[in-house]
Image 1 (tube, rainbow over the protein chains, first blue to last red):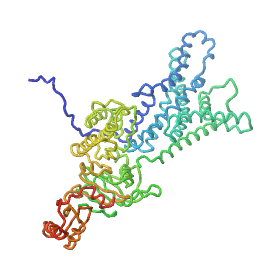
Image 2 (image 1 turned 90 degrees about the horizontal axis):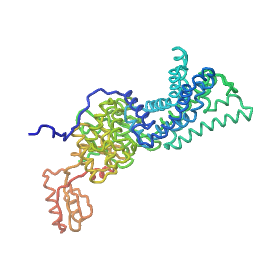
Image 3 (image 1 turned 180 degrees about the vertical axis):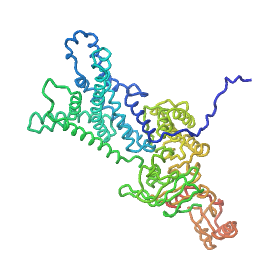
Amino acid sequence: MSDGNDARILDRGYRPYDGPRTGTSGAVRSLLTYSMRRAVGLRRPLSAKVLPTISVFIAYVPAIVFVGITVLFEDVLISEPDILPTYSDYYGFITAAIVVFTAFVAPELLCGDRRDRMLGLYLASPLTRDSYLGAKAIAVMVVLGLVTVGPVLFLLLARSIAGTGPDGPAEVIELLWKIILAGFVIAALQTGLSLAVASTTTRRAAASAAIILILIGSAAVSGTLLDTSDAPEGVFLLNLFVLPFELVRRIYGDVLVTDEVTDLSTNVLIVGYVGWTVLFAGIAWVRYRRIEVTR
Amino acid sequence: MSRPADAETDVMLAGPQPVVEGKGLVKRWGRTLALDGASFSLTKGITGLLGSNGAGKTTLLGLMLGLHRPEDGSLHVLGRDPTSAGPEVRARVGYSPEHHELPRDTSAHDFVRHMAELHGVPHRAATSRSSDALWQVGLGEERFRPLGTMSTGQRQRVKLAQAIAHDPSLVLLDEPTDGLDPVQREDMLNLIRRVGSEFGIDIVLSSHLLEEVERVCDAAVILSSGRVVAFGSIAELTGVGHGVLVEVDRDASAVADALRQRGAHVVIDGERLIVELEGAEDPDRVYDLVRDALVVSGAGLRRLTDRTIRLEDVFLEVGA
C-alpha cells in the first residue's frame, strides 16, 4: 500500500474566484508597480538593467565622494566648511545623470506599450486612458525620484550621521521638505516633457534622442538669444534645461558666487515652469485620447 | 435553417438573460460605416461572431469593452452600459486581442499575473491564479519563459490564459486561432470549448473561419458591412436542411426542367441539383419527383442524399 509520498496532482482543475476585487485603484497600483519595475530593469534581462543602473550610480557617486571627504577630512571641514558643495549645488554634479535617466524612463514605459500593443490590453481592463496615463506619469516621477531626490537625501543622511548636517530636528525637517520639493520640481517638468515626446512615437531610441535634443536645444536657443540680442529676459523661460534647476536653487535660497542666471522673479519662473509642464502633459493627454487601440 | 435578419430586428439567440445586448448600433470611422444599425442579443454559452474582414467584428468587440462610443443605438454588456460603466464592465470581461505582440522580455507568469491584477485580483491571489491559468492552457511547465521565446501557438495560449485568469463572466476572443497550424488550432478549439463548458465562462469568439465557429460555438451572429444578416443557434443555422441533393451524370438542366414542371424549386450547381419542395405534406414526395424527373430526362443518378446545410452555405446565402 502506498504511504502517500507518491501522490501527484494530475489535474489542478479550474477554480472560480470569489475573493475581493480591487477595482480601478487596484489596476492603477498594479500598472504603477509593474511600470516602475520595468523602468529600473527588475525581473528583466541584464541588458535592461544596464542603463538605469549606470544612471543611478552616476547620480550617487558624488554624494558618496562628498560623504567620504566629510569623514576623512573632518578637521579641515570644521575650519573651512564651504569647500564642500551645498545641497542645491549637488544637482549641478548630477544633471547629466538626470537628463539621461529622464530620456530613458518615459520612452521605456510608454513607447513599449504601444509598440507591443499592450495599450489595447490595458484599456480592456478597468483602466481608462486617463488612469493609464496618470499611472504612467506617477511611475515616471517616482522613478525619476531615484536621481532627483535619492542622492541628496542620501547626502543629508550621511552628513547627519557624520555630524556635519543641519542642526536640530527643525532644520532637518526644513531641509527634508526642500529636498523633496526640489526633486519634485525637477521630476515634474522632465516627466511632462518625456511623456509628451514618448506619446508621439513607438520608437524608444528616437524618443530618448528627441528628449535630450529638446533639453539641450532649448538651452542653446535661450542662451544664444540672451547673449547676442536684445531679447527680453523672459527668453530664459525657453530654457527647459536650466529652468527647473534655477527654481531649485531658489527653493534652497542659495546665493550664487557668480552672476545670477536670470533676473526674472521667482513668480515669473513658476508661471513659466507650470506653463511648460501643463503644456507637455496636455500634449500627452491629447495624443492618448486620439490613439485607436482595437480598430 | 438560417434566418436572415433585418438590421432593425433584434437577434434573440436563446434564453431570457442576455449577456450582451445591442440595439441599432451605429459606429463610423471617418467616412467608413463600421456598424450600420446592428442589433443582437447574446445569452450564455459560446457565440461566434462571423464576418469577413471589415464586417465590423472588431469594432463591435471594442464597443463591448467600452473603448468606443456608438453614434447611435444602445449596448449592454453583463447588464451594464460599457460606455458609462466601462471600468465595472471590463473588470468582469476577459479580452484576447487578435495580434500576437506581447512584451518580449516578460515571463508568461508575470504577464498573466499582471493582467489578473489589472482586473482586480489582489497580488497573492493573482500569483496563484496566473500559474493555474497557465496550467489550464497547457503552459504550466513553460510559465517562467519570456514571451519573446514562445511560438505563436504558445502566445495564443498565453493570451487565453490572461483572459481567464481573473475568472471573468465573459471572454471576448478575437481570432484566437490566427497563425496556428492545424494541430495547434485543434488544441486551441478544444481549449475554448473547455473554457466555455467546463469553466462556465461565456465566450464571444470573433472569427472569419466558419468551420471553427461551427465546431465550438453554440450560436453565431453573422455580420456583413456592419449589419447583422443572420443569427441563431448553430443547430438552427446548420444541420439538416430542406430538400435533397441530387447528382446526375449528364444533362442536369433537363432534370431541373422536369423537376420545375412538377413544382419543385431547383438550384443547379454543375452536375448537382439542390431540390426543395415547399408545402408538401409528405416529406418523401420530393424523392418521387426526383425519380420521375430522372426517368423523363434519361439522366443517370450518381448520388441522392438529404441536403446538409453548413455554416458556409448560410454565409454565402446571406451574402456575407
